[in-house]
Image 1 (cartoon, helix red, strand yellow):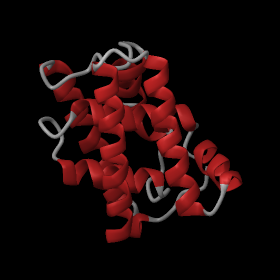
Image 2 (cartoon, one colour):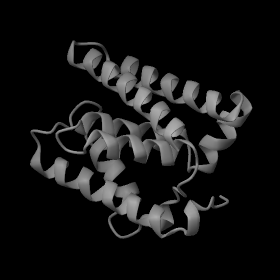
Image 3 (tube, rainbow, N blue to C red):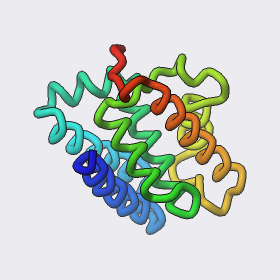
Length: 159
């Protein structure tokens, strides 16, 4: 578990560096690509190769969702979601200890928050200065963690 959190912490740092690039005027597509690369590298290291990366991504509803979840956390920053919680959430997500299936979050959960915070508003537009976004990120993290903790032993769920 500690190893997973350490890898997640490294990814959080990479995501924040990518976000810094966006603030310095780099095209959003370039930043999005760097985030995707960071995710793919981490998945490849944790699961042993690019084929496993693809399987894992699709099992978790798709790589775009993974990218957007990570972007929401990175955009929110430690002012909204304490870094240990962000690390834990990313570790659970990326190592497939958490069943990220949209049907688990129908009540205003993950899918809606990701769409609103990332896809619907554009990369880089969610900041701690936006109280509504901050609240939604917190609620999303709480929902995800509650669902994760309700699974016996953090059991893996088949797609």
